[in-house]
Image (cartoon, rainbow, N blue to C red):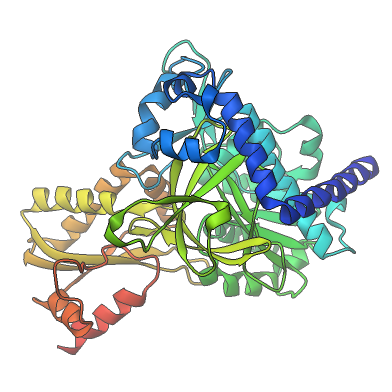
Length: 505
């Protein structure tokens, strides 16, 4: 263990030097990665299609290669899953991160190459540790272990080609070098269990007596685990269970609704909170300053960034490079990566707070969504789920909106719906059941979070009085064809306004 601590400390110092370099020379680093990515892709089927061998500048790339999303890349990804190689990226690709998001499919399958693991995801993991150590010079992080909640993976079984799909966290952990196992807990036999109920119970038993110095995971799931560990240990606070706990690395959902609950659970000012911006498609940002919630854009992870102004008139998609972004403007993120995602619209929006270095905040998604618990419910899911529920109950809907209700003291959250019916269902309980099951069938992440009511309870529906949404839009000066009721919101601003109005008249 002392040798591992020494090696880890040496690596942290090395990475901080590299981080400081890309902060100082961001455009040079991005230009270098652009040229490396183009060179890597020039002999693939995709690269030959768009003439990568003659692309020398970003302007040529911008002009020649069209913007993509998952739906446009899906045929190429599916061919790769079935064993074809050299399609989007050179070499064998056998890992695919399964995730839901802003697509019409129940699940996305994002390629995870060896380069993406090493250059992106592993660098992100190392850098979050390096930044924590820089901010806390007296750290004892490497005297203990990290507890990270991971998912699971399975064999694709599409043909004889060896390929796997599952949560990115499981893919990352499965491919870690052997020595990394000494710095994490629990072991793989527990960490990769498929069933969440069994997994959480076994993690609690395996880690309650460990020396845990850091935590990592999605807040909603970790909250359930920590409550179980407190029950099991009989302790009042997590710091009594793990007195050397220093930091919680969190990402995936908005942390604000959970922060006070975690402070209460830890019962200590000595535990730091560090936000991460990572996804199946890549690792993009780390909160690098303890006194600010802004994220540092990580520029040397095998990702080339482009941006589209969300507020452009006429709905045009003028794409710009990092050199052209401005402070305080909302941008949709476009990425080119060492996983073969070429000019891929990520679906997230960001706003830069600083350009020297490039620090930003995540401002939302490019489509309506609810992602309070990692469920990634998008408007396509909601519309189709309601359509199925109406067809099976004979109901007709005029307008609706939905928002999350957050966990309180570890109890599960839920989705709250406010629906204005033209024709109400005879049995609203049956309508809720059909809607819930339809959403499970349409969205694998929603289905996972609804498992045994662990994270998400059954949805709850309020009946809106006739004309409620029209009246609300009129009060806000939003009548007209260009103004629409926000179908899904990731906070309760609209829902609370509408419920108040609904109860007043």
